[in-house]
Length: 113
Length: 111
Image (cartoon, rainbow over all chains, first blue to last red; front, side, top):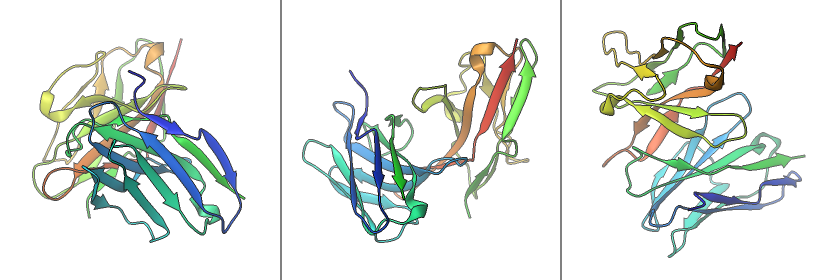
């Protein structure tokens, strides 16, 4: 099993643009969570999706949105990018809704210029 | 507010020395707590969890509710222990659904 996969690995965007990040969970995992990790800080929770429904949302503006597909893969969208959105975006999957054991992907490094 | 604090950004020790990575939490109730580790060029992965009371790679962590701490300890550090360590508190309604991470501590073990 390849584990959690994320794409793209890196991307560079300009302020005001929109970006879509993708995540494929481990086979059989039904829960996907997204985290933002700014340099020098720990990951910060953005969303959790379980069985294709939003089950939790962190303290992020409405510019951030996500969805989960029938195959349990997920997309994170960020609109109207700001310089402060530059970060590593991590996806984590787990079999159940509970966050007791989450498997993290390698992350997508987003740079906003 | 629920919060996890890791007061040290960097902990530097020599091989064979004892290690203690500090974690303090703010939570009303009986918390579950985890330690995650990220080795160089690898993914963030679960190291150990409070509830299992396991010793993983020689590391242990005891929950001290009086001091609201969950420090990670190892009696004899190895060079391969060098990594970023994050303490995490699972939260959520209807079951834990998110992790609150501390800022992390970088452990550097020197030969």
